[in-house]
Image (cartoon, rainbow, N blue to C red):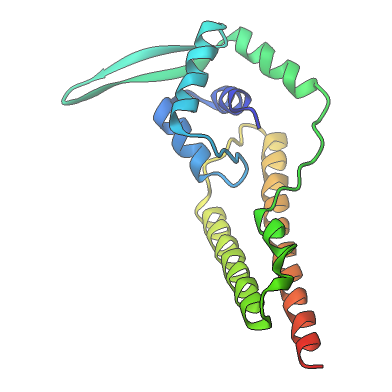
Amino acid sequence: MSINYAILGLLSWKNFTGYEIKKYIKESDLMYWSGNNNQIYKAFVKLLEEGYVSNIVEHQDGSPSKKIYSITEKGKEHLKEWLLSDNEFIEMKNNFLIQFAWMDILSYEELDKQLEKYEDNIKTNIMMYEEKQRRGIREPKRSKREKVLWDRISENILSSYKNQLKWVKKTRNELRLLNNE
């Protein structure tokens, strides 16, 4: 994911401070970003230089001033060009599967323990995601169509978690049966 497009997309929804964008991305199951905070602020500098975003400084009594960013018309056009471009190949990146590929060197107990931890992590992710949904995560719903788009995104994320849970349970069961032979 290009951090620039994530920022432009969020700013097309509403104005944000840099801190709010960083926090939103960090808490999002959709907008994965493994970069550091400096990269987000570097992206803002580049987006400002290119005229895709603008900012105003809001002074606050007793608190530091904050920069509030908004998308420009040029930024909206740039975002639209990206939205109309060809989709990237779907990346199936799962670090656990890389580990799992080589777990045959572990004892059954060690292997099952790793799978159990993975299963627990998935259950925690499901629980946290469902709680976010229950509380109504911050997501744009400016129109009925946009609500449908975001509802389908949520459905996709949750079904991915649930599919991983189903997979790990099946795998543990198969390995348990194999170990009992």
